Length: 464
Ligand SMILES: Nc1ncnc2c1ncn2[C@@H]1O[C@H](COP(=O)(O)OP(=O)(O)O)[C@@H](O)[C@H]1O
Ligand code: SF4
Ligand SMILES: [Mg+2]
Image 1 (cartoon, rainbow, N blue to C red):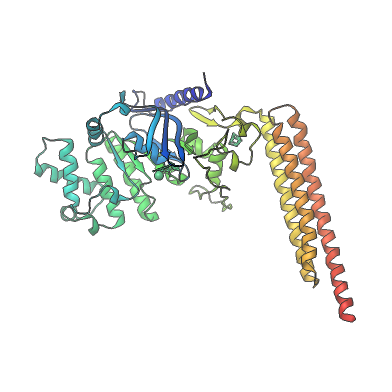
Image 2: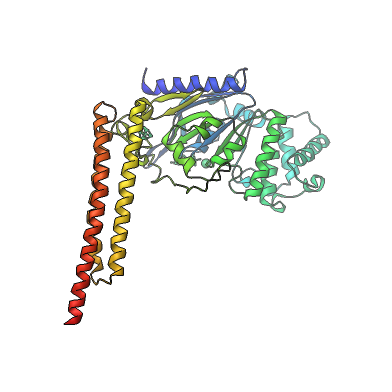
């Protein structure tokens, strides 16, 4: 079994567990090892790189990840709206057992009209400015059910507008999209998506463009409608806070891969993948009033035209080890229905702890060096030295060297991370961190002396 196949198998099993906890019935949607590439002039962009999951009836799956991680491309692949030069190059999508990827154009149109609907970030993507809202709702309905009369369709359109919270729906139904506010258009689009009672709703960043109050109202509305209509939802967002509100399970995507997947509470309270942890640390939490500083994930997403070997998150990961740069990490089952693709899960607990300690020691050394550097410059300024820059350089060089030493020690440790020797390296890194701290303090003293020298030299010069 190749590693990719092994990964797909783990995902599949876990997805099955997750789905069965939400519903014992058969699955509504099953995606296996889906791969989508864009064939551009510059080369092949692997936008979705082998993702698998399944969705039960009446279940809400959140897909989260930074911009460009492949969330929309995945969604467009499900509903057959992938734009050229994008192409599904592997895997399968099954909806109630039917092979979606083999649908003819007409079958796909029927599928979109009857079984699945999509809500986009920008409502004008699907509202036509030259028709009234009512006409568009009625059109969606009559396409779905040819036997329905015009009067009945109008009645249902008004009812749907009321359901999504549009006041005075009898009058509003005859208005054009430009007569609606942003929030109202978003509601109208939800009405449009739900009027055919689809079994699956794909909501792609449906609230991103709205202000916070309207966002909360729309989320509330979607939750309510989901319960009333028993709709399954794929909820795509880059905002984990929104996910907590509405989702049962979550797939975290990075650079075309699902890096972690699990029950929403597991992802929030027991995240395992460094990227998920980073995402959580980088955004405000409604359930957290500790006022801790938010920490952005450093670096930028990788170039999908030329992805690095091994773990795609490697270039931004503070735990990155040699093996991460060579081999893609397999999935580890880290809890019930909870999987994460990271080499750290394959290290012993002891190793992981050492790694944490070493990183902490390095961070402390860096902080100490930075503080020493700052103090040196400060004291040079306070003592009125002319040659502040020389003092600053001296302190900076010594501090920089200290930090480098700590980083080297960390790297040595990381290189041996999967072997027994790593233990020793970890303690060496700890020692180096201590040394770094000492060196940084020395640097501060040196800088102070340099500042004093500079000061007395300045005074002598004045005297002369
Ligand atoms: N039309 C296109 N041509 C080339 N590459 C594309 C195109 N659309 C999307 N991609 C690639 O697919 C990746 C995923 O895009 P997308 O699914 O839209 O991300 P998001 O997670 O923000 O929804 C992008 O980073 C980009 O590299
Ligand atoms: S596999 Fe390595 S680089 Fe990737 S997330 Fe895990 S520790 Fe970081
Ligand atoms: Mg998108």
